[in-house]
Amino acid sequence: MEERRLFAASLLKSGWRPVDVADECGVTRGAVPQWCKALAQGGVRRLRRKPHQGRPSWLSASEWKQVARAFKAGAVRAVFPTER
Image (tube, rainbow, N blue to C red):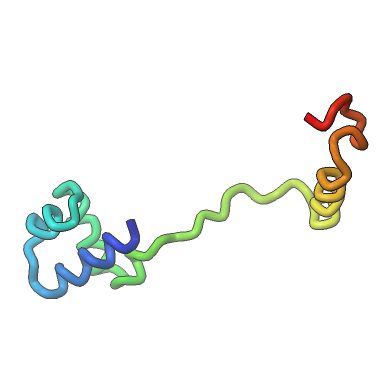
């Protein structure tokens, strides 16, 4: 999707009409004006993918290490009846 937005940006900068950009990129005609607005506000940087952080972990680094050790030890060792 990021590639598509960047390609669309290059087309828009070279003078293509938004309708033609939408047809060329295979997106709705409503998407291109949003990209135009993003380009005007922050340039190509605004069209790049934004990493999603997600919710912070409730476990500390040492607790994650304990979880990893438990997985490596196996389910039976963690008091389950089978390895399933």
